[in-house]
Amino acid sequence: MFKNIVLTIYVIIIGIAIGVAILSNHMTEAGIIEFGNTALVEIESDILKPETVTGDLAIIDTSDTKVKKDDIISYVTLEQGNAVIRTNRIEAIVQDENDENIYSLKKEDGTIENIDDSCILGTHKMTIPYAGVVLGYIMTQQGFYSVTLFPAVILFLISIISFAFSLLKKKDKPRYHY
Image 1 (spheres, rainbow, N blue to C red):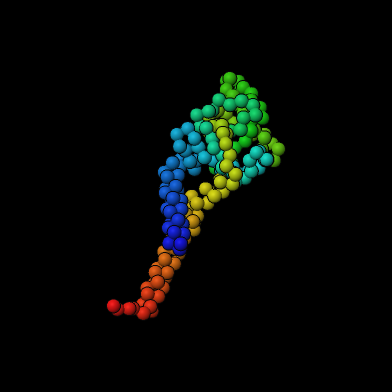
Image 2: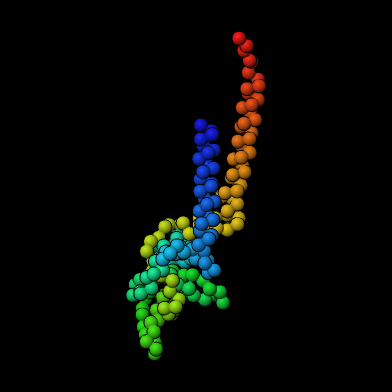
């Protein structure tokens, strides 16, 4: 029974480690995990509450950049000089003097943010509750160590101790000779 539990936990740990390696290989310079036309984006605000909340994981279709009013999109914006990925609902679409679309998005503080087509990553297809927090954590070095490496070492030590105790029990049993 103990061996089965340890083996199951090892398989889970190895699966997580392989998953992190695969996700890391598909991460762009902007920190977006992309698989073909699908991107994984962590929701970083409660602006779309109750549909999504901070920490959810949004599945984004990056091939779908033709958007309309009320679509939920993920986009790149600048905040304090840094590129940040946001997910929000399009409140309005207007055309500028060059016939380019300008998309208006309401921010949490009530102000309006305007972006153009070049900022849009894609449209929202699905949300996985709180998976963004988990994924964000295990993608860090500290998270990887605490979820995979440390538990594996602890299980290894427990297995060695268990093996040593089983050897001691066998040594203490009387041997019968026939």
